[in-house]
Image 1 (cartoon, rainbow, N blue to C red):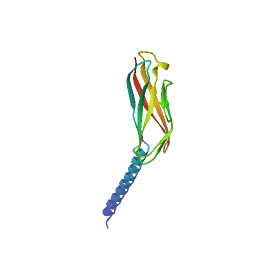
Image 2 (cartoon, rainbow, N blue to C red; image 1 turned 180 degrees about the vertical axis):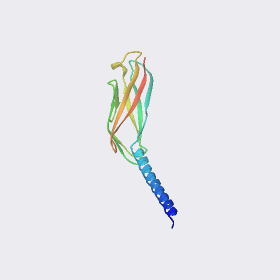
Image 3 (cartoon, rainbow, N blue to C red; image 1 turned 30 degrees about the horizontal axis):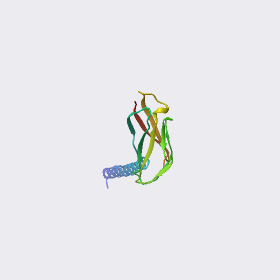
Image 4 (cartoon, rainbow, N blue to C red; image 1 turned 135 degrees about the horizontal axis):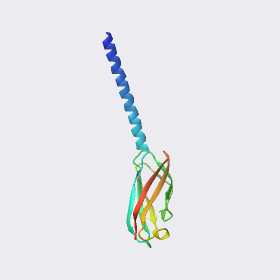
Length: 140
């Protein structure tokens, strides 16, 4: 075998090895991304809410992964908004959970106020991550 053939074979083998390693790493990263993400309702627009009324709404969390997720705590950014029901639960693989939330503007708002609050979901397993959903609207 001549010198040029050896160099060509060496280049081909090096390139092939790099391609295999790249594909393995890309696959590993894709799997981690899938495991780390719940699908969540990003915003709940309440529209117009009367000052002396309460508005109940839901925020959906879906688990499209093959792992169970532990939600250690669900909490809100304001005392005028509260979680109705469980604030800690497990979302099994393929499951969707609807978390009920209640907004009561009479405790902290006035007519004409914009609603700009958040609901937080603290996930502790299989990864630690906080998700949030915005609550928007107007108090009338």
